[in-house]
Image 1 (cartoon, rainbow, N blue to C red):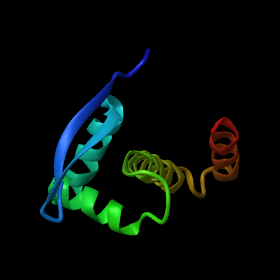
Image 2 (cartoon, rainbow, N blue to C red; image 1 turned 90 degrees about the vertical axis):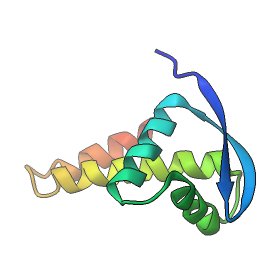
Image 3 (cartoon, rainbow, N blue to C red; image 1 turned 90 degrees about the horizontal axis):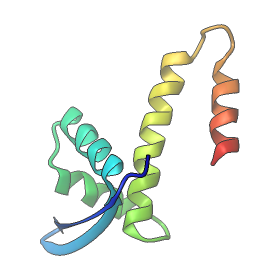
Image 4 (cartoon, rainbow, N blue to C red; image 1 turned 30 degrees about the vertical axis):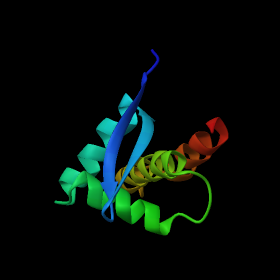
Length: 94
């Protein structure tokens, strides 16, 4: 099932910009911001300030992917030695 790309305006460090992301990434980003007691704008500003190359939409996608990969990794660490297998499978599908 395809997730449609949604373009939204967001204010980052006082500047309005638009970001195009699939709906699933917007949802994940909002969940992360909420879990960290941050506004969506503050989280996106933090991601923007840390990115070294690429566009903002790509940086956000990679941030969300990394967040959930780390959650999965933390959840599976130490269980039957499967952590490496899960990470290797995820990396090979990318």
